[in-house]
Length: 277
Image (cartoon, rainbow, N blue to C red; front, side, top):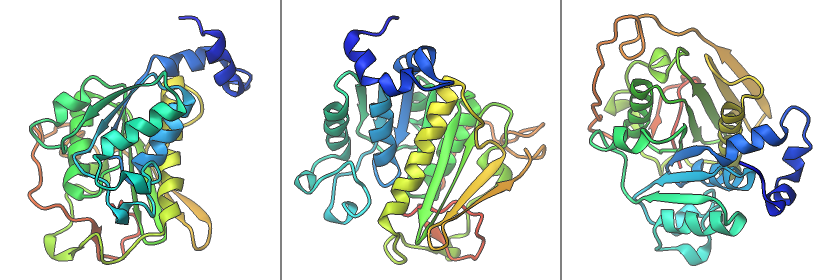
């Protein structure tokens, strides 16, 4: 495909960017990315991916916009309160870049639909707010051989990692979610709103890097950000050959959704991906 004159003007800063250029931009224009969740992490990811020129963005979210979302879910405005999140997100995506195709899945991810929803896409960004959905994204992507970015935020910090074929998955770090007794509700501990933006943009960057083949991905790495000290930590880890999902002899061969939907573990384990949006 050749870029139109309008596209050449729109994506000029990419086209003149050393190491990026025309071929990388074409890859973005031909790409299909799925956002699971249009909340705190999905909002900035959607805005920057649409601005970058990703050709098709799918959004999975069955929720509506509430006033409590607006502190961090920047794709939604006050006038959107009560609207479906996917309709609100589509409107902003089209306002930024009318050439981006948006596929709306106004449902929640489940063990019954995850494989079907994820299969058509080139990359998946997980922006969910509960452990049950997080493990569904991880498991379905590994089974389908799909690359994905996992992200989580809580209080003043956030964490993210990227998985591609043959790299460690989330279960390599945390084989099972925490016990119900160790879980707090989403509304009890709070989150600094801008943390969602910082981590969502990291996820969008990982997606762009994967699609275009530039740079090094956060594979086999957990990136942890602490806003109070402005420190970023890279925690390196190896693929677990005994992982029940992606190890040498996997025993998890079909999706199973956890019955509970916790958001935040009370443990002091700083390496746990927390979901609080």
